[in-house]
Picture (cartoon, rainbow, N blue to C red):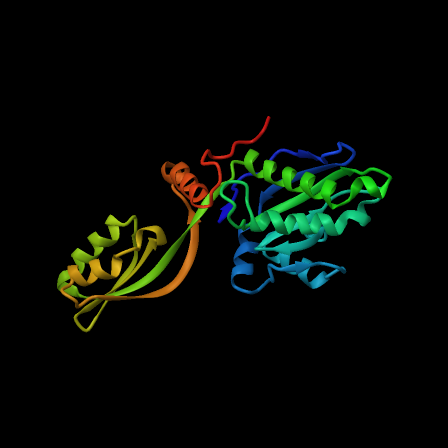
Length: 264
């Protein structure tokens, strides 16, 4: 997944015909709101077509400013789109395109075309041509997609990698071998407890390093250790792996391998 940990500056997106401009800022979504979405306390999907006071109150309860929450117009992939504009002529006529473009970008981020999560996308301002012919989808949507993606890059967008939280059951006398195996795969032991001569280890390992783990576990424990999946989570990729991982994903998808940088 792609996300960010700091706010962007305001970024302008111009339509190909230069007659329409959109101004966006992207920011990290509050941790409490994101956690509430993960746990199903708040839905992270759908358009907000009317004043959903209960939703806004819940957003505020979990850490978002209430006045800001009232500006939410769409949610997708646990990202929110906010309209912070004031009195922009013709904006209501292109708002569906704004929402559709937001959904497209949150499905298709700037770094490696992976889904985006945990973001606030704020439409700050816009200038629109008076003639509808000059503000159709072919003009409006590229401008919005460009502005949001550039804002993400300027906010140092990064990658979250999937990790599996697993339970490993192993005879206590050979648990050291299992802990070594977890450590060799960039894993971390979260918890250990003993039950009737066996040790139950809770560990978290990157999915990218899980290949062959079952065979290695069986080998290290002479077939007496086994594991089961508890949950999958997404966590920030270490900086030293960032470039190689992004290049690898881009290569797999047939994209130019260079890591995208913000345009000046």
